Image (tube, rainbow, N blue to C red; front, side, top):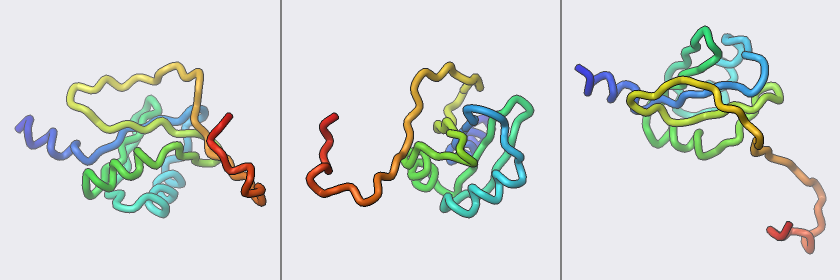
Length: 112
């Protein structure tokens, strides 16, 4: 029975937002429109979300595609693990995506 429960959660990512907890209905529609393979979304009263995917590969693709933003708020995502304790960490750094349009080719470098 425990093994069956673990298998059910094997395709689940756990997440929380850095900032205000979003409205569930809108978030649910949003993730279904942009994340392929999302099967179900559940929320807890303390601000955690469970995103169940159809496959492990679909879940990993979304986690590896981080950082994700919803209405400008970053979401911290991780794979569910057996025995996982849900707690929000103190974040001092948050990865972000930026777009630099019309950047000259000679400035395309990884040097900082």
